[in-house]
Image 1 (cartoon, rainbow, N blue to C red):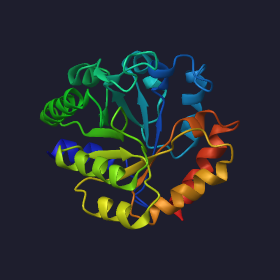
Image 2 (image 1 turned 45 degrees about the vertical axis):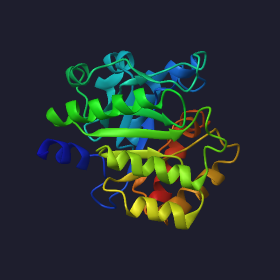
Image 3 (image 1 turned 180 degrees about the vertical axis):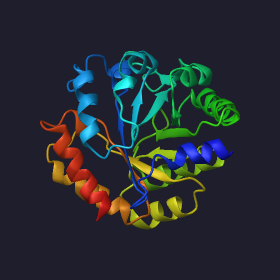
Image 4 (image 1 turned 90 degrees about the vertical axis):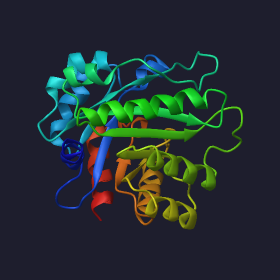
Length: 251
């Protein structure tokens, strides 16, 4: 597991132990997403930021990964599903760990939705990817959400806590989940998890300061960083937004 620990450690800033990851995998699920039309220019500008990791699907990684700086780690996203699918919350593996390695991945990520009729397959995918990735020394980031026919409120604090616990139980090295917005329950889930927890940004916020406030609240609960996409690449000035986000993480 030495390789896993070394690679995972590169995602965290040596000064404050935080990480800021920019997911850019939305094109598979959403299509032509505003803010991601010119991914080359967006990625080129990241060299002026404190982003520690970028999440890409394999096709975009082949095209743009060589533009990342040495400080910015490449995460290959292995899961896919579109908003047009039935059900829309279903995710399937579309890239192997070996292909991710060939593309120069520093880590891989898997998307899991619980509380639906496809949960068993997605859990199986996560378990298999963790085993294969660890054999190759790659960390696994698990993006886990409560979505589907059995779910009424995706942000229910107990459901969010279950997502975090699930990632730790199945051996993920970094767990991305929404912020449950209930300090006591969320803090307990983060503290009891054997892996670092980071939060998602959620839907596009009209007021960026609301996002910053959410991040500050989550930091008080023990998170190690963020993985925020739409609220960054759809911001009028993405680099400026990243600077403000990093200031909040470093406070």
